[in-house]
Amino acid sequence: MVFVDFIKAAAQITALIELGNSYFKEVFNLISLETIMKRMEKYGRFHNLHPAVEEGAKELIKRAFAKGIPIQITQGHRSFAEQNDLYAIGRTINGKKVTNAKGGESYHNYGLAIDFVLLSDDGNTVIWDVNQKWREVAAIGKSLGFKWGGDWKKFKDYPHLEMSFGLSIDDLIDGKRPANTSIPRKSSTLANGIKEKTSKAIPDYPGSPLKLGSKGKDIERVQRASGIPESEVDGRYGPDTVAAVKAYQKRKGLFVDGIVGQKTWEMMF
Image 1 (spheres, rainbow, N blue to C red):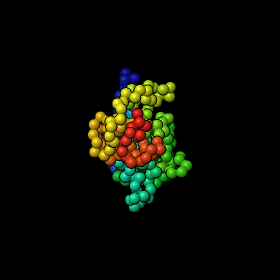
Image 2: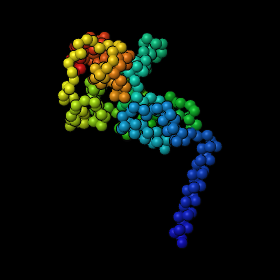
Image 3: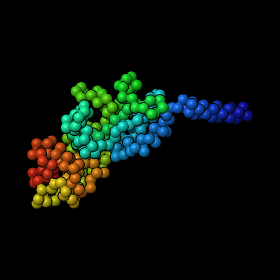
């Protein structure tokens, strides 16, 4: 009987604590973890992220919140076009430069990076001050396997956290992906977990250049070879594909025109 009474008392105390926490948050208008997570889902902050990066982003929010530091993810996956828009700021668009990466040259473009920001206690204001709390969040991120942009020597990017899985941007542009990311082509897994092309399984050059407005299976192949995420492969040669092809051509020392002629095709396949 004594043990049963103890269990009942413990349950009542737990209920009172939970009620007190709820009342405290309501009275002082504090944002809850549940609200932050719902907000992130609503705005698609985890959409198209690599599974490990998505898991890490969610865990980052939870661990920071447990330390009394509410945060939110401001950027996750970013399309090539969105990346080019950011690159233009401070160059062709008025403002301070925010990135040195063009479309295809950021880990965001492959779902391997996130950006975070601190929130006020009520969750209504974002706080961009890189203070001690910010650095605590960065430390949590690094403990989860992220690399922090604040550690970079040249262009410090304090909101930025990424997981490269040992892959460089050149690797990603060439179509390599972490082992548990599907690659729509014949492949083998190397000792380091990277999938690498082992068979062309690609038809000969189509005979005429592929460019803005082109459509079809060959465009899908070009999109994959130039590093466009599988979720954005649609067989339509649009602005994102032009940007991706230009980035690929630049990396490979080819003439940069955003058009897949025979030389670019042969380099890709």
